[in-house]
Length: 270
Ligand SMILES: [Ca+2]
Ligand SMILES: [Ca+2]
Ligand SMILES: [Ca+2]
Image 1 (tube, helix red, strand yellow):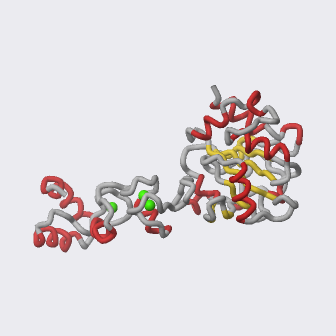
Image 2 (cartoon, rainbow, N blue to C red):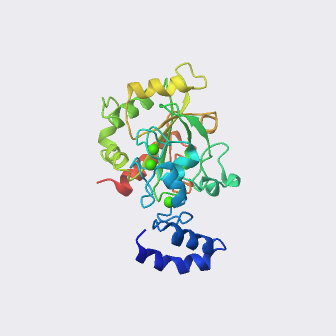
Image 3 (spheres, rainbow, N blue to C red):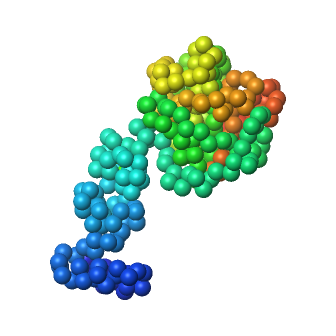
């Protein structure tokens, strides 16, 4: 830290905590210009901790992989290695995800507008255990696509979103969807509810799905039964807001199973 900046911050530190005197002494004694116990960039790691880790005390994301230094330390990925990320897929991360949970509003059977889509953790195509609520609190709506490996329209949608064949003609209804997901205007999570045999999916199921329909913007997450149990047909699409409250769904009517996608196209499509 430059001396002028230190002089500005030191009085604040004195007000802030009992350690301030000691910190100021450290500063004066070592003459190195760094207040070890301060967190200059506000990433949750003190300057001293950042010195030990080899991260930049003035950069919340030292390796530029999209994940803050403090979050990487919390989750066990390397904050100095851009190849080592909290999620290999680069999905959003929400450190305060517990605060978004409202179990009283969770869907049990038939998702209705105003219900909260349940929290669930499942393995994705990269082998990471993904918490769906990491997508909460980013100011962005999320499409939850509840699909099954054996289901034709599900495969057709995955292929269309991945830029492959569009055998079902989804592009004529939803021309903007792939672009909106790619640019992050809306997030998309594919929750894989069943494997090829109609049984519970596993890591292999979601990995093979991604191999067939490789869309780098879409996590494919193996359902633990939470989502499969609450729907009556495949695929089912839910649109949730940043609090995971459902804002559009088919609401028990199979004829309207694409409702959430039409809502996205209407709201953000060109
Ligand atoms: Ca810091
Ligand atoms: Ca990082
Ligand atoms: Ca990293």
